[in-house]
Image (tube, rainbow, N blue to C red):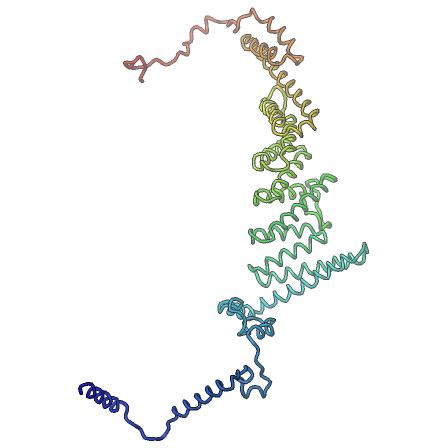
Length: 447
């Protein structure tokens, strides 16, 4: 009984919450019936609705369904920002799209892009004409004109959009154009300004290689026909206005100091040293070679640098009246060369051995000169010391026998000469050590 009562109570409550609304169908009922009918029909026929059928009336206007991959293959050539089916990682961000819009609306930037495109076209034409010239003077002249046109256009393009990647590339290409027509002075100036504006440019290696070639060309021409201080260049576009040698050295110093880890740094250092050596500036050559040996221990120029340093030391030695530091360093460096470069040393053994003998001769000559100097001042003790040193340490030199003879001649003479007025010397106080004012317990002195 209680269970039936509870069931009646629940039924009455449901009727209160959901009262009957009559026998008419609502809109929702009709929609439900239609949906059920479609589902039943689909289950009975087992038919699949195609994408074209889902398009419905759109088919009448040429609409056609394709899968996502097919749609992407169809429109992948279109810019990503215009295609909804493009993969999300290939779409431009909102910021990129905004920047594109801003940049495209700037007339100067548009002008820069236009000029850069025109310069590219002229450059490509110049390369094509030059490659097909086959030695024709007319074709080469035409190519040079196209390179000149391209270079000017590149400079104009960079001027319309300063401090940009376009200006960086335009400046580099302009310098390349001038380099190809032997306008080395102008090309070097653009390279120089570009490195100042963009010190970490991606064109750094190519720029340094071209500047190295320019510097070497100027040095070679200067050795053929030395440019004087008052010789000025007004016509030749491949040469600087003045001081050809100085300008070339400045380029090489810039390469080796600004980018010491590059492949060109040790080559530039070696070329600077060779140039100074050819110009008979042996002190600067020696300094540069020392820099090469110290800073670039793995350089392929190590042996020739050490070899030239010995030669510089030999040439820098000014005689027995001056310091013998170059003689000491030269003898030590010859030993180092033979130890570090055994194979190359054998190849140049004749010259190295000759330098070793010359250094030894000059060492003996210098010691002999010092002995004669002290003998001339009647300081016999000092003179005997140096004569004995020459006889013992340099027996293979012609000074040894003479030094031995002079040593025996002076052997019985007093070490110091007698003073002609000893009584006058005795009147002056002696330079004795200063005596302590207070003696400590240990016997030492405390002032």
